[in-house]
Length: 496
Image 1 (cartoon, rainbow, N blue to C red):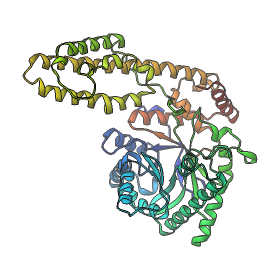
Image 2: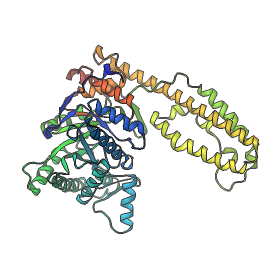
Image 3: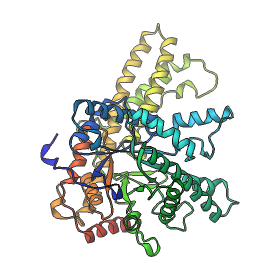
Image 4: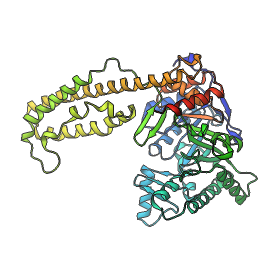
């Protein structure tokens, strides 16, 4: 760990909660307790001053919460940190993976939870009070905690998206009234949870809080404030506990900081006037279209990667041997002909141009290429178990394919590195000279940390290197509001 870059993490007050939180928060979107580096990264971040953890029951099918619980339990037991020093924010509302399977089973058994939005095959939504009560209990069990500091309704705009797609005969005004009615009932349950002591405060995490009112999925912050006050009155609370909002914000997706929403100003300005703390997510992953994700960070270096053209040609040649010598001996019914079983040499020859990033490529290797090749070779190995020439071919194929995968990685890193250099060059004309030596990711994070109205920037830090890089952004001297405006305008003007 580069201690020179680990200046004391800046802290601020989390809105009206009075909680002291770090300007950088630990996001757990892809964190998993079965991955040791993820837990090591969280422990490292906590030990270096990051004290806000953002998680959700649907992240990694609950394994993100399990990881958080394990790390916190270990650090608490050692006395490294105390429960009072950590702020844990959970989310409830999005149904995916295990929670979605559970909901499907309940409906099949005719024991449904009310208010479920069947949005897409892989994504449902539910913020019904009964579900909120149940899921807070489940999260606390996975987290090994007695209470959550914050609970956020997770992407409630799914209700609006579903209506836009599947209820076109219903007026937008009627849909919105139904939506805010659901929000108020959810807030009422959350106020009850605050009274019971299972949570401290609540809020909303949404991708459409900063959207113009004309957009069908836009959420009006003022209506949320009104809903919270009404909910508090219903449970007899002196004041509401609506305190936190979470939105995406990065160099490209900068509407929360730049788009005026009527006379009330930007979303960040509105939140500040309402006394709400603002957490921002996706600081280094800009979504520029349905199939375009731009990583605002330099990729890892791979200086000794094989040449892609040479590696692809080698695999193609070995696959041609299979098609000529072994495919004619295979009898299959349906599916591709045996001569087409192995085509990775051709399909990966131009893969870097099609891939959107390192994460995309890693997932493709782990979920598609690896399992497919392993299964095929296992099946074919049974049929050719007495054929030494096939065994030799299979060994050579695996070696060459691994070389091709490394070559694709190297070419992809080279492509992403060039993109990152262009982005850093674009920033160079806007940010102070003293920032020039910082990495692209640190400059991107530094811009958000300098943006007025942002309480904490949530960063996915799944290994210690990411922790080090992110914490280094806090050491950057904040830049002036006028410069922040210039940076956002430059990215809006030049696009991707």
